[in-house]
Length: 83
Image 1: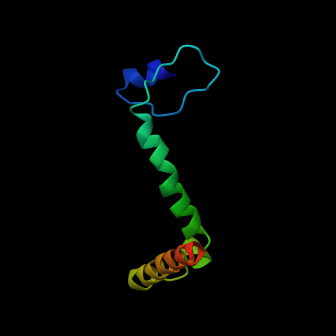
Image 2: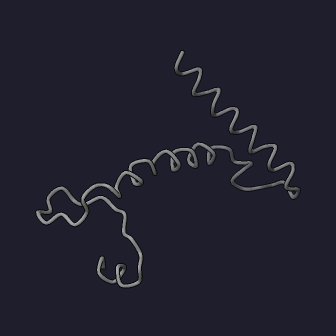
């Protein structure tokens, strides 16, 4: 599969299994993969707000307002857990 992706010009960025002896990646490209969980976590937090997931609002302005409100609530929750 790696070879087929390379033939198409696609860089596979996935962690190797620890049990493999022949490592294909040297670890430099995996830095992007390690930061990826931050975005996935943010999307999961936004998924807790049902109004954003289902999108009841028809107007983009109202949806955007709820999105910003959800971001503020997420940040406030994070700040309250630190103190």
